[in-house]
Length: 273
Length: 158
Image 1 (spheres, chains in turn brown, purple):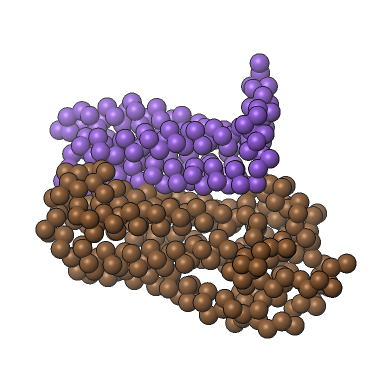
Image 2 (cartoon, helix red, strand yellow):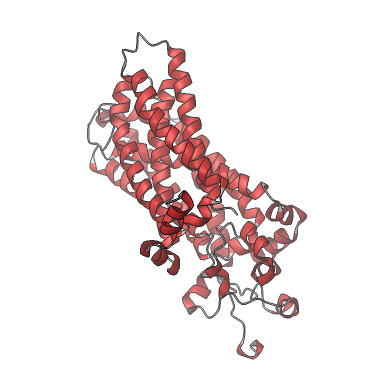
């Protein structure tokens, strides 16, 4: 019983921590305006590519206002501005044959995303049922520890599939995802969700024998349940929103705060003709 | 009115138009739709994992079904409402999209199956039903709901 919380802790917290660390390492760095990958996507004639790689149901409205960047313009910005380590890493990743192949393939990207959605049902669905039990909303007659023992391993399985398929999705569009405000929000909240899991398992859940049979668990457990629900709901919401490019770097002007959060450097005025 | 005519009428409805015009409405409704899918997944899995003997085991299937079914039905309503709104905004596209028809077939089968065959197997005295039937029912149910999920995702891919 003691080892499982540790494992869940590792599985949840580590990837989130790594990604969040990446964010904090590079947030203040100056990013070049935008990347070849997205310039191609924003090119009006290539809507088919866009619909595959941007993972959004390509609604015309999204692309109508996007500024297409010419290749020469990109060259200009490529070397100039100081760049973060991660930015370069993800640019190299975006240029790799793996990444290009993945986001240009007809079915691979869609299939991986389908697996991501299936795993969401497994992970998010069962995690939510456990949270509901912590809130006393369902399965009140089932001991909390039994729900945890029998259902949480499944959520761990689901989480591993989520991380793997999510990493693959990221590797198909690394640069755009990395500079996407929703992606960053999602990673930060993933970290908080991991911390919440850790606090729950190392805190109130250690004394579960005292409240195992409570139809409505004590306040601390309820708080963990509410927090977990809110965080995972926000994670799913922001995950879904990654597909939309409202705040992407190539859609200037954006409020300064958005550019700060996405580490974008807008095009200087003289570049506008 | 022909079926296509009906779909055209849906597409031209005021609600559909309003959703199409707004940049935020469609994504927000879609995100709620996705949350509903997650909750349905959880409720379905609690029941089906029990039938397969892989989830909770000490409680009777009937008891777990009584606990999880309200969440299933509740989020099913949420999904039908949000899904209906999404449909209104792009009915014509759905009409010509194979994934839409696949999803609707799976959905219809899943609902009928859950509330007839599965309910009968669950509510019958457990000793009278051979466990193997419980497992078959669970697998069919998971497959049907998975079909609904993937069909929905593929409506978004063109």
